[in-house]
Length: 487
Image (cartoon, rainbow, N blue to C red; front, side, top):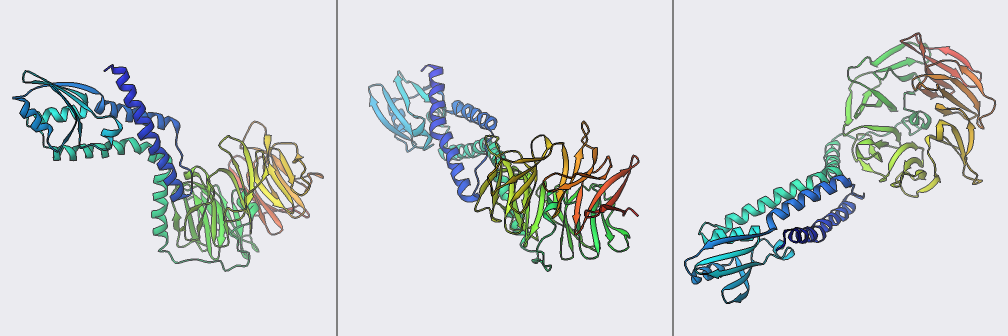
């Protein structure tokens, strides 16, 4: 047989009858079990298919082998063995199929052609079967052992072939989540005792979660490696964590007497008195952490930035939507997710806390999304501040036509930080305006501010004094009175 035609036949049969159906079956099973679409990287798919084809061609390409036999009866005795099925008999020749290696012997047309002449036999067919028959004619074959060996080779080969898919598809991730949930289920449950049923305000959680408060203290993240608490009456400062090695803190929330925060690839909690630090989730990076009604909502960067939730002990981890989320804002009875589609189109969707009732609010880029009344405020294209009203169906309204680094809302105002052109780490002052962007007033000319923390009637923000000293200021947005709290 022509070698190219032989390779092409094996390649087409392997791809259409084995490889593609296997991928489709994996996708269906994954969707049914995990409720999400399996993710295949096409480069990995093509590389895996190439490897698989090479393996199949090596085992099943046409091969010719010659053997000496003592007589026709000896040959027929071997062919009547249970390992072979005679499909055609003619003068001086036979066509046989193996009774093993099914269903591949059917899929790849595993027929062997045998010709006998003068105590010599010519065997032609797929390499695997030709060599097996050749060994039997020499009396070397133990078919049971060969069968076990073949099955082991198939299992090892299948593992090698499928490993890239398993790695890319997220199956390993799902297994990790199942194991994590089993372990977390052993932790006694924690429930909210306060009336707000929130770990932090939406405004604070959407902008990094750098601070939260109770009746006595402000709890603040400083320098990303320290967790401070400041007495609201005396301004006295102490630390739950200070200059912690290998720490990068964020996403602060308060539940009863526990402070929740992220640290690089984990979610931790610590008592407000600085004791009993615990890691409750360590499966990878997470962002936009909101704690609402006994659930922790977050964007899971380890799983393609899908929105997730888990309970207050870090258990019952579950995916809410299979979308690549950019921003997450969770309110008491709904949430907002900014994401982009498979066609790389931006969307802002609103839905219930369980992911149902999904509706599209906006079809453009949006970050730091906040909702007030019937309006949605967000940083959009070119870092400008926009407002979208859903009642009148109007186009988004440009409020601040300058680059915004971050912003927050009060009942009456927008407080925002202007970005410094050409330098991400600098800012061009903190401003306050009306909710429509008018009547803009300067709060502080600081050249370094990356966080705005909303606490009751005050906004806390950081400033840089000199080259390396960070201080914290707070301002009453009603009278713009600045108060130093750095002592």
